[in-house]
Length: 100
Image (cartoon, rainbow, N blue to C red; front, side, top):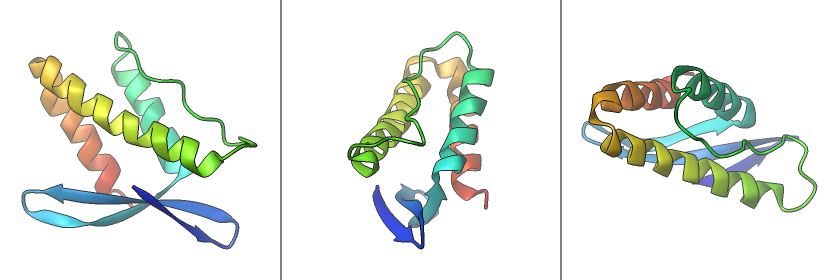
């Protein structure tokens, strides 16, 4: 995951490599926030990391990028750990990545 800064907004560039698609997808903070809220709503019994504040003062780009990357790794971990939820996790992740 890398970042692009356009005007005053920051976009996170996600490199996606899945069967049938390889490319880069740009997402903003609010996209991640909505995705995180959907995860918390749908999977209430699982733990997710604290979501980074929109108003971080120190090294916000790296802190957010690290937390967003960790969130993707955690989703993949949960998909492997809970096979009965795998399709729901991967479906939500796919929807997040392809939604514009």
